[in-house]
Image (tube, rainbow, N blue to C red):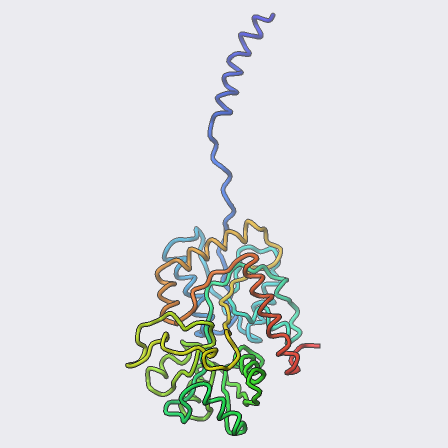
Length: 336
């Protein structure tokens, strides 16, 4: 009997050893198995829309996904429509929303039915600087002189910007607090409209992003006074005949008290997704930001190269929220 068992057991043992030594392929990591929907928290043609369509184009051109992508605009309520839509599709890992800091600041000033924590932060893929602009041949030649003029004649000085209770007006309020002035804010439909109004000398300043006033600067209609950044911008190529972005002094150098003010270009998913699903899109967006087309977009619009995800992005959101909440409270904006 032992002989029979030995005769059958030896081949079985060899087979088990061979099985154990065989290298089986690991289970495939998660990836979407149906088309990915990219929801833009803004209207067609705006900066957020352009970013969403660029991301789609890079994913398609470089074949970064095995499924197709589709872009949809849901810009109602300054983007709140898109974020609420994301909340209502909890657990659906084939949806992304492109926004800015509006995703976490809008719920502070209006009852919208969602909080940013209802969604899943994926990444911030770039940041926008803000610049204090004035019209060409203005009597003030730098930011310090401009704010001295504001102090002398506040009723004659008006700051224009995109929308109300948004980033431009928030920065204006911060400036009023730090300089002790009462500069009046005039809301327009967009940064491009604020640029046109400044070029026509209907307002005395705006705080547009670089791209919003680029054509007016090249057209010799407006001039930058300072950039709200801790250090000067990195882009040294001439934009006009005499100046580059890097030539613009910081507002800190000009003594305005606001050392840095930026807003992030953010990507979120619905809540209720897994860590593996979020990690997949983090790496997808990392590849997007490394593409030459994305780098060209960042340089063309004078954006700040940034990539934040995970706890780094959450910390950014919390710090930014903590900074502006007292400003909103003083202005009476916080929802009750």
